[in-house]
Length: 107
Image 1 (cartoon, rainbow, N blue to C red):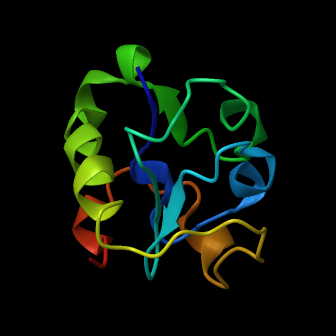
Image 2: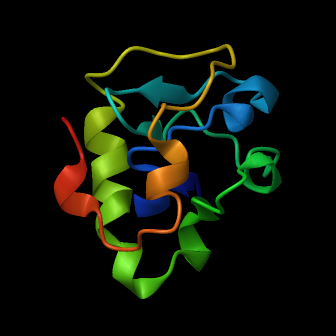
Image 3: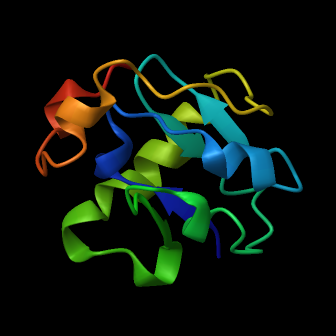
């Protein structure tokens, strides 16, 4: 099993999770982070670090976020690896509470 970054991360991109990952399995896109499922060791260190609760274990992902299992797998193959914490996106506070924002994902 792997951990999955879900819709809440879109247009926020907090990187607290990246800082604690022992295997550097996070990848960064323009407005979203993903976890490479084959690199994740299921240590669960990232999940509590996410200030917007965007990270779930693959077997506990909400039904309306199932698409993000495939999205994480797909985009982690093409986006660059991120290993250090950065500031969140400037519009983060505006988008933290928005629920449906999959259409805003920049690939």
